[in-house]
Length: 592
Ligand code: HEM
Figure 1 (cartoon, protein in one colour):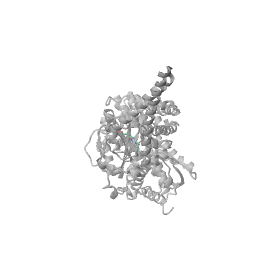
Figure 2: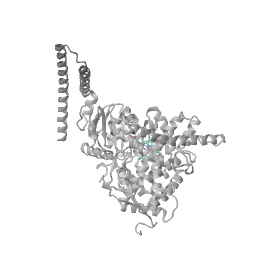
Figure 3: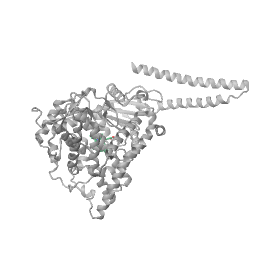
Figure 4: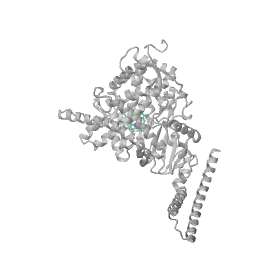
């Protein structure tokens, strides 16, 4: 019915447009007659009418031409709401805030199921939610180009790994992926522990209060990244970490506004807005920190080099060694769940990095640039540092905040998590070891289930270079289409999850995962462009959450169906991750 009304409206509009055109022509002809009979020149009127007629004619011809092009014809074969001339479906998002947009996206998802297309002007966006279709795109080595929208990140992340493409992306991924090798990650366990204990201390001030736990998670994830990925110790950090985390959150909000307020998509319009001024200021804070980090690390590197202390080269660290039977010991539940991703991370782990010496991501990049083992420039290093700091921080901050709020709602599940931790640690306060993390099987299922229902990266977008046939109805997506993979929707498919809206960690019991479509669970994306930080994130989340949950019980002040989700670059709750905490007594949940 609604569609019918919209179609009639469009037809009326088209009629009135062409009527408008003829009226303009009639008026102009009338003006000419008047000029000829009276001999007077209506120059002002001419100045207005002549360009107006030209403009209306041009727009009309352009619209008719666009409608006839193969691209538009192919796009219109896909299911989706009827578009308006020139605007496409932009009007659907007009005047909506991020929470309304999320609601609208979910309504559209209900209506169009597996494939939905919308037009933003004459730009075609196709939303995919079927794992078979998602696999066609993500598993491809051809469709690796990010969509145009990622250009909004450029002033911030430059050509970092997240947005670069082609040879540059390939060569940089080859340098960066090994810096997340499991042996290097194991050496971060101490830092994860230390920072997790710090946050437990800070949280003591909140006992009895209702507070937004995301603020604490944002801060601790930045601290951990500075120390692990950048090699900047806590003692040398100042308040910059907090300012950085706040600036990142505000930047994400600006970028998000540029996605859905279509006038801000134009650089010229954006530069006139107050948001641009804010962006310049925020980038000053963000780049100020990354520049400082790189400057200091480079100085230390050169001083060490002068004293003959040279870290091993990347080649030495990633030297291939025969499989020695040691690998299975490091495999966690998540590694089994993600084994179908066919990315380069497992391959790297199966090739030993040699010495298990702690080397930060930034050390490795500096070392490889200094030793000329790669062509990476100082500027490129900075872009990668900005990318890792962004990708590595906000995602895990949201991920851990969702787990803590969900456990606050589902007390029975929290009891099971705590009992597993009690079984591993008893009433001791000892730090978590890497081996302990392999025994946190239930906690791991809770994390995976939380990533399923509330994936921190709710959409992934690619721009197609060629026509692509997908599995659903053999639809063909034309070259130039922006494909949007709605992770949030993919994860809530009743074909793969029995009660898809229900928080149920048993969805990740081995018997439930072994025959499931790999692409029905893609919180870290999949294929050649999957998240390089996946193993880092899972290890960090386990240690951080285990440490918090050994010390506190979390209580949510709102039920899960009242979480207000915000369609942002990173999925968040616009009502805040409000919880309460109570100190734990360090006895099994039944005794408590
Ligand atoms: C729960 C935590 C995390 C989630 C859910 C997550 C998710 C993702 C997703 C979905 C992508 C693909 C984005 C796209 O194609 O548009 C991605 C890419 C990426 N992630 Fe993560 N991520 C997490 C943590 C991390 C961490 C801790 C790091 C680094 C320390 C990291 C570094 C990256 C990088 C560099 C890329 C770009 C990879 C490429 O294009 O080759 N991520 N992540």
